[in-house]
Amino acid sequence: LAPLRLATADELARVTQRIAHLVALSPQPVPAGQLAARLRAEFAPLLDQWNGQASFKSFFRTLGLDHLLWITGSGGRLADPQRHSVPAGGPQAEAEPDSHWQGHEALFPLVREVSALTGAPLLPPQGLRAILDLLCEDLARQPYEPTETAQRIVAQCPARCGLAVGMREVVFILRGMQLNGHSFDRGPNDRATLVQRLLDQMLFLCQREQLLLDAPAGAQLRQWIGAEPAAGHGAEYSAGFSAGD
Image (spheres, rainbow, N blue to C red):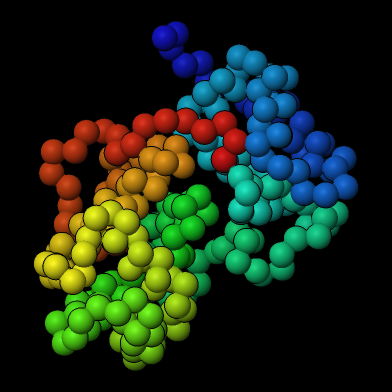
């Protein structure tokens, strides 16, 4: 493969202006996949590898188009809130860290990216870890029941970590462990095992969505979930590039 040539400042400025122009011309938010394909066609081969970024979405975030909003879901859409109807503060709008992320702000961009692409709950580390701790405690006391177990965890989260966590977030985590092959009936249900199951499922989802995780990003993912630092991992956790995400 030919070595990657990064775009010059002038080339990036032209791409940035083109994105802003195309979004401004559209009467509705622009599907990210369509926009990515058009940019690649117009600026080939400059954008074949998104200027060294893992995806179009990652590339877009480097351009400083702060007046545009990335709306998640269905591959993503780009909107100008001054021109388009967007979900005001809704779950599809790009989130910003709140006070619960204090001390973990460095993790937020990655977790937001993972959440947007995989549907994982956008919870701060203490919320995710509280769910795991409460799950371990619950399974030590009584058998696993999908709805009842999740309801008990939801009810106890505010007292445990100061967060009101919804059923969807808890069910996503429990179901993810099961999809990764874990049986709560057979166990083992110790914290280390459950954390590893959740980590493996999140890595699988990132790979499925073609989200490239280098070693630092993989370490941040482990830190978010509460897993021990990895030993012996390569530079990348999952491979692949996405044109439209």
